[in-house]
Length: 249
Image (cartoon, rainbow, N blue to C red):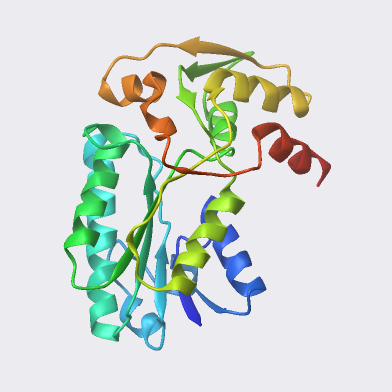
């Protein structure tokens, strides 16, 4: 199959491209570096001609509601419109477990994206997954304040990005399936502990300091709602197994 990956240079996108290629599919990366911009729609239609599915794993660094909603609304509308013009029969999108009712921050953007996808004429598959193991890396790198890393309290059930990619490529191969079973990680984790273990594995002396941040976005993260329910599928790679493999590369 000829599969386009929007966000092919990101954490999950790289894994999707790898898995798809290993399974014998032709991967069409959609990125500014290859002449496509999902925010403006430049280059999308031409790149999607002959494509049998689009996997949308685009992301934005903003956790604020308005920028996130604007990004996901624009990119999703443009991708879906380009798919209709190019005759793409399947749109596969990645979202987040547990965000129903959390119409705040980044999650509001993902909910807006889901509404556009489910209302579109393009047949779709929608996979919700929990935060990735790589989520800890973000806070280790970006939340540093001298010898400390300021980490928001979070009760998560993180999953390996590689397992998410396997599920997304499997969804492409299976054809449009609508809302798919959620995918979560194998065990509960505190975000501060993840950052602490990652730093220790890298020999980084930084000390994580847990913060209880205000607002619905951060309350949802620490409440445990983002871990998924008992009916979710579970990945098998634990954070420590992911960490061990990462540090031996």
